[in-house]
Image (cartoon, rainbow, N blue to C red; front, side, top):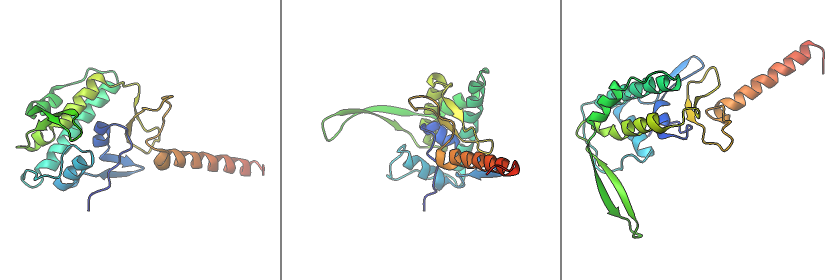
Length: 195
């Protein structure tokens, strides 16, 4: 059964980073196996269900963790306004090989397809590295935020109209914060003898 991945960020690269998360004092790693990485990529429509390459056991998940750390480090630097160290991510990008193909859809529309080589785990993950580089170069980092909950480590891209999003999701953190504030107010009123 595929793992249940969080897709709360409104950005595929941030969803990739959110596969490692901390909530309260609990650390959660969604990528525990090569199959989890494949499931995540299929869920995000980065690969199909056609025959997939075979890698040494653990090679793909290890490559995914390394890519995630390279992206995370660069994202933190970019968000902090620091000089982004691009070496690690460029090394990942250098592994990627793809070709462009123009494909005619069944409705007659033309679509440009990127066909990535999958000979190595790094090549298999190259389109994530490419999307991350695009996000780092062109993303609006005023709208790329960490959830405001002190106990949550998830990131999101605030694509709301008013750009006032504060939580990874209302169900996950926003409502919890509201309930905690409500209880604190009630406790304060009870302590002061106010009904």
